[in-house]
Amino acid sequence: MASSNSSSAALPLRATRRAFLSGSIAGLNPRLARIPAERIALLKEIAQRWEHRLPKGAIPRLRATDACAGHGVCASVCPTGALRSFGEAGVQGLEFDAPACFACGACVVVCPEQALRLEARDSGRPQALAERITRHALRVCSRCDDEFTVSGESELCPACRKDVGLFTNGFSAGSDET
Image (tube, rainbow, N blue to C red; front, side, top):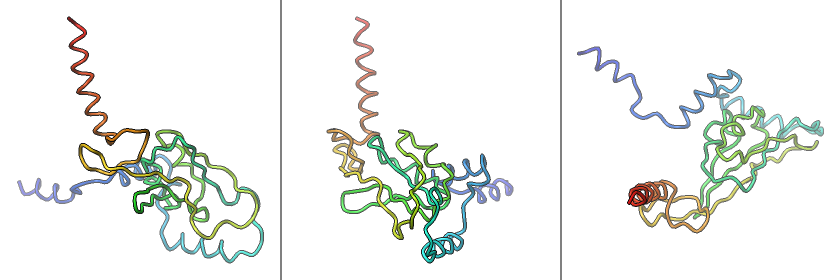
């Protein structure tokens, strides 16, 4: 009985989706393991002090299409933190810090909408600040009061739309049999 208590104490109470996806992707490709913050800071400093023009493709560019639904799955798996979510007064989105990116492509692979494209940046100096590549308005769900990314005219968040859809489809399927 004592051994079950010690084993349950070693397990985390709640694993985050970010930790799970980061661990899964790093397991598939060791190159994607988390990079220490000190190394990222040093690389940024070197990039900002560099006075020569960089060759094309040395610093990547990340583009998001209109298909982006603002899930943030892509940002949760970025091993360097170059792609991250932001939120402010009724708006959320993604921002991309090009000097911190090493073009692993994990964000492109996991995007459910396939809305991201990793491209070679034209030669020149990268931006010193992160650029915002998406902006989505937020709305409060009329059913559960959670904030969600606006898509269309729905007053319900995706989870509540799914619940209502399942409920509606479940009853309409039974009425067709008469």
